[in-house]
Structures are given as C-alpha cells and as structure tokens.
Image 1 (tube, rainbow, N blue to C red):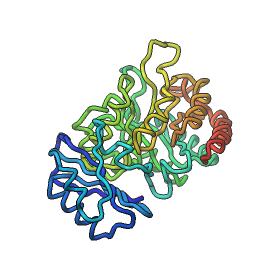
Image 2 (tube, rainbow, N blue to C red; image 1 turned 90 degrees about the vertical axis):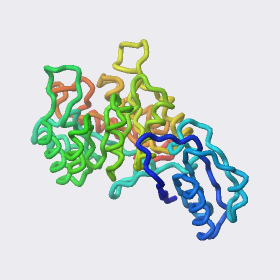
Image 3 (cartoon, rainbow, N blue to C red; image 1 turned 45 degrees about the vertical axis):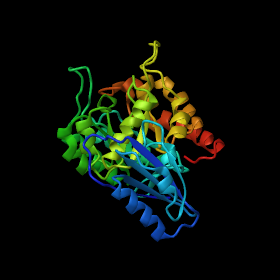
Image 4 (cartoon, helix red, strand yellow; image 1 turned 60 degrees about the vertical axis):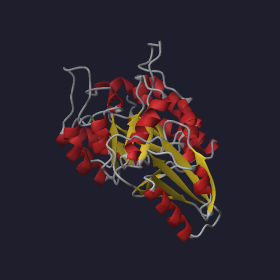
Length: 355
C-alpha cells in the first residue's frame, strides 16, 4: 500500500472535528478516486490515500461536518465511515494495513523485527568504533547513541554535543549502518537534520508542540516515546499531531510507565504493544534498557517484547558496561547482546517474524 497526503491549509494547532474513512469500490477508476479527493479537498479536508492491490481507502480529516449520505452517492464510493476516536490519522481505521517505514533498505513495521543497538551516549571515537564493529558482526543495521544527554544529574556526563553526532555518523557510515539519536530541544535541529537518520525525542517532549511542529517538517522517521505517565490515547494524539503537521513516518516507542513498583526504573507495559497495534497502524518498538534500568532484566523483557509483536527493539550495548560514563547498569556487553540476539531470533520465528 502507498500513502499519499493531499494537504489543504496548514493549521498550527490541529482542530479536526470530523474524520472519515471512504472505501472506494473494488478496482474503482482513477478518475473516480481523483473526483472524490477533489470534492473532499474543496470541502476543506486533508486526505490520506492508501492504495492497495484491490481497494483504495481515503482518510479525510477536517474542521467541518460533512454529509456522509452525499459522499456515498459519489461514483466509485463503496461506503463512508466516521472515525470516532479522538486521534484520527494514527487510527487503525484510517489505514487498516500496518504502516511500513522504509529507510534506505531497512523496513520498520514489516516482517523483520529490527534491532537498534549501541551505547547510551557516545563517549569517544574508540568507544563508538569498538561497539559498532561488534554490533555490525552480529547483523545490527541501526547504530544508536546520544550526543546531548538529557539528565536530572547536573554533575554527570552530558555528552559530546555536535562532536558526538559527527562520530556517530562517521562510524555508522564505515559499517554501513543508519544512525539513531535523541533530540532534546529546537537548537539541535540543524545538527540532527545533518547527521541522524532516525530521530527520537524524549518523552518529556511528547507535548512540546513547538518542537513537534519543527520535527514534522523533516523528511525523516520520528520515534515518539510514550511518556511514563501518559496513556496510550495521549501517545496516539501526539502521533496525530506530528502526522497532521506533515510527517507520516512515526514510530511509537514503549519505554515503561510509572507504577508503585520501585525495583525497576519503570514498569514495561508489554500489553501496550498489541493494544497500540490494534488501535493504530503505526510501528511499535520497545526500549527494555530504559524501562528496567537493570542489565539482568533487559533480556527477558526484550524476549517478551518480540513475542508480544514488537516491530523493533532499542537496546543499550557497551563494550565495557562497568566503566561506561553513564547508564552502564542497564547496558549489555557485546557477548550478552549476542546471546540475546540468538534467543530473540528463535522467538521471532515462533511468531512468524524474522530478526
């Protein structure tokens, strides 16, 4: 399925009060589809088109109420259904088939469970090279590493800044890998546009709408981390915001929620994986490292995530975790990661996926 957006007027604040799914007749003529699209655009709707081998589905979002009966009388229209959920573009009803996000030759949301691995923070050229070389041998195609560390500890290592992103990019290129890093504020946007292939933003920015609007302008996949106190609906509404502002390449990241349990950093909500995949068409990845904060809990949570249907894993790996400048307690060694990869591969096969 291919998705095409037909935007009307850009709204800084999404104000949609109406959302519909228009299912065209099987093998509807292109001129019929174009006529329906034109009619909806003239009514003030933004249109999301999904074209399959047999059917075309149009998702319409606007700020006015349309007469469904009138739309159903248009040639080539099979049926029109209103979307009742508060989130629209991210809803599974808007796009029944799952979204697949392609970055070069890597697909997130397809048959393969994608592993994104690397250190919590880029510390030095030697560190990131050693880790990347070890991961590349194990088939990892996406290298993670932060350069601007968002931490409540003002005395801890804060990252290398632009130099860290440069090292991440240079190292990834040497090993034919993509880059993945976390942005924390608007001033970093030009650097991320230059050096990073997949941009994640911290959960504290999930409702930072000024940052979301600027991120949505980039033609890059964006990873939306569910906030520790955010509901699934909150998360999908933030995804809707990004999509309404122009970026359809959204990946949801489950990284744990706050509960009364204190043994782990957070409680990893495994049930959120199948729930989000039922409610939304967007890919879901899981971060067991950040969720648990404990190295020994990362493998069982990663295995559970694969079994529950995650489209990817975000795992912190360090060549010498005990001497990492930060987050060593939640980082796997290269040997531990290798063992976990073999286990996840077996589980992926059991649920008819690949790794």
